[in-house]
Length: 276
Image (cartoon, rainbow, N blue to C red; front, side):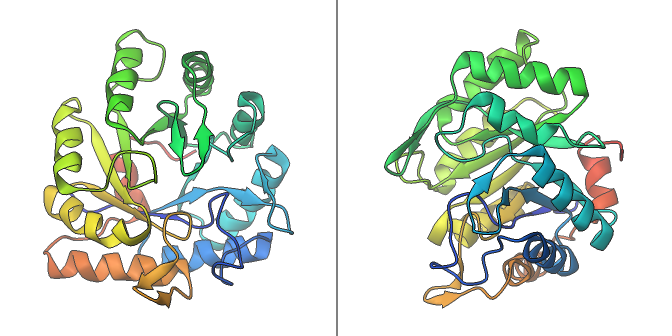
């Protein structure tokens, strides 16, 4: 079984310091959380950025600033900037995160519209085609974010048509978002069984499902994402002090389940990436 790739989603666009005072906003805080995650065993940092007051932004200037600062502290880490941004942002605004130098190795590509709590996360077919075209042109490997089971069929159809990058594909199955596919082992197995041979995949459990979905993903040979974007608690009623604490819990789970953890370079090999 290949080594386990751990991704840390360190801040997201929605969570706030009111919910957990350790959620990072400033560049310095984002670097602190990225380093805590990498030091604990994360090979990848999934990156949203904020203004200093916590407002989410997709400005390539802010992404550039945060990317340079993170890579100074963690020179080898794989960064996956979000093109999801925050609910209500325009497609052009969301894509601005890919305009950094150097061009990102990877970026997220959301695979369809869905309920997102009380909001609608809008990803029309034209939007997805535009995002796919950008990533093809720039040589960015997408991480395909599937919140619903139908999202998988949609993106596989687009790949067959050449509208988004194809093999080898990397999927992130984000389960447990209120209004979307529940975070059950049955649902995870269904999704994993439908992906093309040679693909890689990651499981992300939202909220209380963070670690109950991580465990089967580890055993099944998949990869795991944790972090403040998805879950603020180390265990029931105990707020995590850092993203590193959440990553460390996955590392300990992997050790108990007999799975080794991948370095960033090993993750690049598994994901068929070339460091820029």
